[in-house]
Length: 183
Image 1 (cartoon, rainbow, N blue to C red):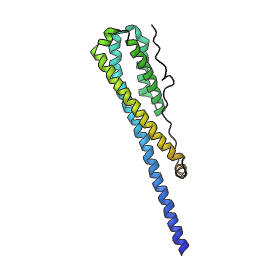
Image 2 (image 1 turned 90 degrees about the vertical axis):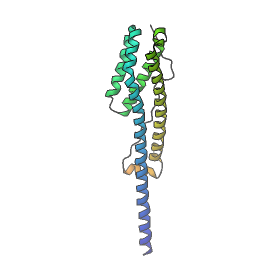
Image 3 (image 1 turned 180 degrees about the vertical axis):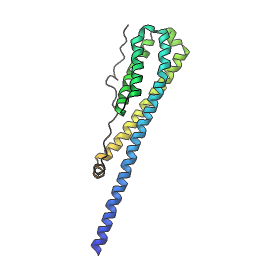
Image 4 (image 1 turned 120 degrees about the vertical axis):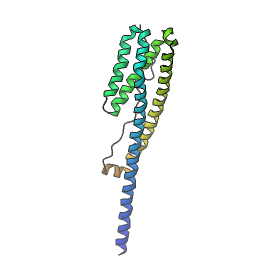
């Protein structure tokens, strides 16, 4: 009789542990999804500003056609990206091209003095800061989630229910290089 009671208590403890751990893993996975959605929202905000930026720059820097086409193509690539990693990669590519675009605009004093351009540049800078913060938040959420997946004993529950690790957001390869401006 004592063994039966001890067995039932042990079973309740194990089942309770599995339930609590499963729910924690689901909560952490959802936090990762939410944090990526925050990045996606800020990138979308940035992409919504790009047509206005391109049109403003076109009027002053018409011979920068290739650069403006690249910016527009990156924006389109983001819209058609399927996975989170593809979206992040397209976001990185656009960030690099925008840096180059803003470096090029330094050579156009009339453009730099244009109120619309200045406002767009300021809004894009604010959005870039929000994107950077969102990426940091995403990496924090992914690290917490992946740690939970890898640590004993929660890794047993994660394996039972096929929870998969998430990839960290990596900085773009050329993030530490200054944009190259040629004429």
